[in-house]
Image 1 (spheres, rainbow, N blue to C red):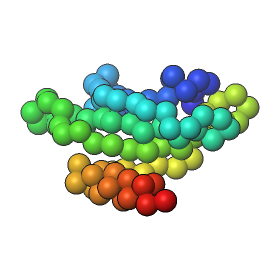
Image 2 (cartoon, rainbow, N blue to C red):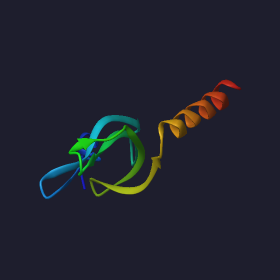
Image 3 (spheres, rainbow, N blue to C red):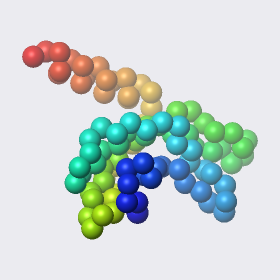
Length: 95
């Protein structure tokens, strides 16, 4: 758990090896409920190289001064991300 938004990350290590590397972070909302969009790469243990860009939206609730993860949505591909962008753009601009 973290006490500040800046400390929230999707970086993940196993046995001292960074297996999930955060490469981008966009805070979408702040407050008692915080929403963050992360870009990250997973380590391919066979090659030792990081794979393609991936994306996740994470929601945190702040309780007693600490951010607690509550939900997440993983965007499975750049194609799915593009479809989300198009749908949101259509909805927002159709008003």
